[in-house]
Amino acid sequence: MAVALGILKWVGIILGGLIGLLLVLLLLVLFVPVRYRIDGKLKETELTEGAAERIKESAKLEAGFSWLLHLLRGSFRYPDETSFTVKLLMFTIVGGEKKEEEEEKKPETRKPEKEEKREETDKKREEKEKAEKEKAEKEKAEKEKAEKEKAEKEKVEKEKAEREKAEREKKEKEKEKEKKDIVISERKATPDRTVRETTKASAAEAPEEEEKPSFFARILGGIKNLLLKPYEVAQKIFYTISSVCGKISMVRDLLESDTFARAKEAALKHTGRILRGVLPKKSDVRILYGTGDPYIDAEILAAYSILSPQLSAFLQPEADFERRVAGADVHIRGRITGATLLWNAAMLYFNKDIKRVRKRIEKIRGEKDESESESV
Image (cartoon, rainbow, N blue to C red):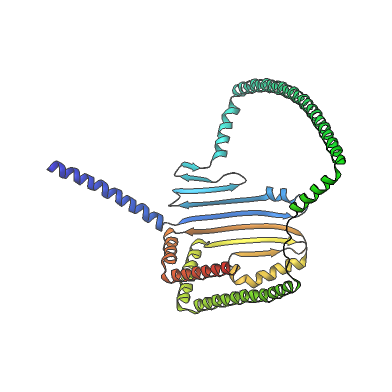
């Protein structure tokens, strides 16, 4: 009994430890924020011929994230790195291909004998590939030659068959001509009987003429169609207008309802919290631009001044009215907390007013589709 109790005690301790560890990990994931940063710089570059190459050479970008005191981190540097690198402690999980290639190249410079052996191996491989290529080309040429001979043979046989067919058709035409000559000679011998038989056959073969509607019947039918068609068109138009008016009234009732007002308030509230949780907390973006046209530059500044209450906190443009130039200096810092995103997303999904508005919109759309199908 004591042994069983001891085993159960240790099993309970292990399970409790595992459950506690999972709870700690869950709390860390939910409440420890993921911090991100973006730093970019584009040196002042004139937008003349070859500007794309100069921008590519002068542009620098560094982006990264970290979580739990840099326990998990990732980074990307342009143009130093070509892929995003993710590390856990000192272990690389994703990326790092370029560094591995550089490490592989280092011992090769220290050992030139290996390079010579590699060159000899490459040379032998190239010779082998060349021989295989020549062999393949030779086999291809022989195959093409055989196919060409086969095609010529088939062509000769086809021409022979066509000649035989033409001769058979010629003989058949001659036989038919002889038969026609015999028939004509017989008809000349008995003209009266042939005329009577021909008249009877034509009379038997002549179909009975269908009775055509009278002139007045055709006029009455045309008047009837002219009267019915506008009536049908007017009926369809009336049905469409009534259905559209019904949808408009339904939409108006929905927009004026208290449910929609509460749903709108909840959606704006929780969506704003999600955006505030994702958008950067610190940002300093300076942009230098010049289009070469002072009027366009001034228009851009005017548009910025209209939006300056929202954009001035993180965006500061500078115009050059004399040159076509571009430049930028970007520094962005922010953090994202999983609990904030999860809580507000759940509040949006499970909100009763939002569900009712969504169902009402789906109902209106369904009735609209039905009315359109009926009108068609």
